[in-house]
Structure formats: structure tokens, C-alpha cells
Image (cartoon, rainbow, N blue to C red; front, top):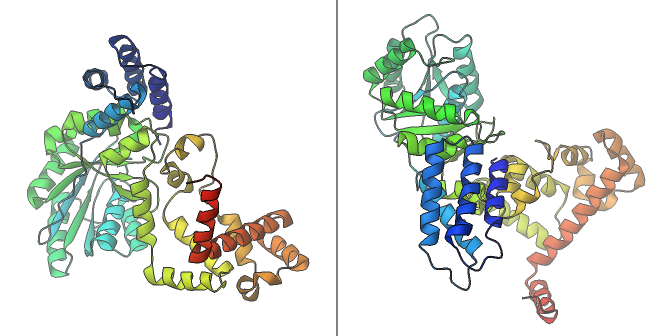
Length: 445
């Protein structure tokens, strides 16, 4: 995500490395590099020009203290301006009402239907709501079926009228159905087109007037860059929507839409889609996105994802097993599965400060743990509980059963042993104190 933009910003900040102070001359060269970085990311020229002017003025207006280099000062100023450019702070969606009604809008292919499912899943699992998905895309072949598949995958009811070609009727009927069946949030998935046309705009305007939604959202494919911003402006002129959803932010996006859509339509980005799975949805935080764009990682989001998968009882049970030296391959497998639930491994690594740049050219499979899981699942229950049983013959059988090599099996067992020893040491307070004492003696504080 935003890899090329990170590289261009790094190049811009290098101009000030080794400089004793920020001057009109060196800041002008840096500002030019920042503007080029934004233009390459498909940010409009006006937005890029205004942004660099603000960065330049702020940097020149600040004193460089001894503890901060000019380069560090510019990173700070750029971070502040990026955060402000993308909205300053996160913005909630309004799902209140009896029922709350959320109207989805956007072009065909932007990811409206998938996002509708993700939002329903988020409302159900995070907010305790009972959402109803409504199929109002009456034109696209199999659109209704697609929404039913999405609804079934997350356990959310879908309302549809396959023979009815009147979107307004379907939407109003769905709201009555929701009231009668205890659904407290209605998400209406509307039709999109390959391009904006008058029929499309009139239809969604009519649906909006009929249902009076508590929230109207515009879904945009972040990979389309500046075109997405222009489309958002057209929709906003007609619908006056409440917020923007950026989908496919995990792809090879240049970032133009994320950076400039807020300043053009003056509406907040509320969510970002970060993958195909139904839980691949994040609340948009401008300051955290600025962190990631500047290669600072996003530790807060990483911790939040970990907390979502954290089971306190399970953690206490695991701690007891570690202290008793009972940690086995079943526990190891369980920890791997929890990490997988947190999201794409490369995306998670990018949230660790400094790791994004280090991982830039590293290819990590979407299912990076599949070989490890295959090896563990090829063990017998007894072998998983008692790793000491794993002799040469057993290892060969496991390698054949998992479709891996003996070398890979030995490597995993070695990693498991190292992990178990480390976890045992970390769980023992005396060992921790001793280790810290040794580190102090070595001059490590």
C-alpha cells in the first residue's frame, strides 16, 4: 500500500539530510520533490500545489531545535498536513433510527455489494446490531444472487424481490419488512453503472427521497485515482452523501483518491476495505494513514487487531501451560490461526515501524502459514501433544503427509523448540530479572 509514494517522500526528505537549518533554498527543492510524489500518486495538481505550499510555509515558520534535525522537522510538518488533508480525524457513521437506514452509492465495479456485506458484518459483530441487506441493484446480472451469497457467508438476512424492477418499491418494502422482523439497521445496495448517466442518478435520488436514509455512503475504488475523485464530486453534487468508502486499498494503489478526495468533496472518508474477506474492513484514521504513508507503521491499528482476536480466558490457560512447560503443537497451531485472523501478513508487517520499507521487495504468500499448518496437521494427536516423540521415521512420514520436505519439518520443530524455550523464560519472573541483570552488565539498558 502506497509503496511508491513512501519512496518518493523518502527521496524528498533526503534533500534536507545533513543540513543545519531549513532555508528558502533547500526547502524549495524538497517541496518540489513532495509535489512530484503527490502528482505521481495521481493527486490533482491544485491539491498537490496547495499542500506543498502549506508544508513549505509551516517548515520555514518553525525554529529547528537542537534535538530535531531539519529533516525530522519536515517529516513532522508533512505528517500534520497529510493528516489534515485526509480529514484530520476519524468520522463515525450514523446507523441510528428505527431502523437506521444506510444507502450505498457508486459506480459498477467499485465494490458496493462486497462492502455492504462487510459493513453488515461489522455492525453485527462489533456493534451488536441485527442488520438487513437489501438488493436494489435490479440491472446487473446475478447482482441479487451475489448479495445473497454475501449475506449467507456472514449470517445476515437479505431482502430481495427478483421479479420487481422498481428500486423504490423494493427499498420501501424492505424497510417495512425490517420493522416487522426486528432488524434495526437496513443497508440498501443500489445499482451502479460503468459510467455516470442520468437514469442512474435519477433512480438513486428517488430511492433516497423515499427512504430518507440516516447515512448515504459513496463507495469508490481507490485504484482509480483522480477519476474516483471526479466521480465522487459528481455524485455529491446530486446526492449530498455523508461519507466516502475506499475499497481495494490493499491493492497496487497510488493513493491519489485517499489523499485528495476529502479536500475535493469536503466529506470524510469513513471506512477502507483492505482485502476480500468479510472482516477486511477498517475505520479510516487520517493520522494512522499518514503514519503509513511516511513509513512510520501503524502500531495502534496492529494492537487493535490483536485485541479483537484476544481471548482472555484462552490467554490465561496458555500462560499456565507455558509455566508448566506444557506448550505443545496444538497451542502453536492455535496461535498461528489467531494471527491469520488479524489479516494479510505483509500488511501486518507494514504496520510495524520501519518494517514497511524492509518488506518492500519481499514476496509473502497470502497464506504464508499453510506449510506450517500442513506439517502440524499431519502429526498424530499424540505427536502434537508430545513433540519429544518426533524421531526420524515420524518426521519422514509427516513430510510426506504434508507435501513438504524433511528439511522443512526439521526447521519447524527447531523453531517450535526455540519458541517454547523463550516463552518459558519470559513467563518466569526470576529468569526475567536475571536476564535484565545480565543485559545491564553487558551495558544494554
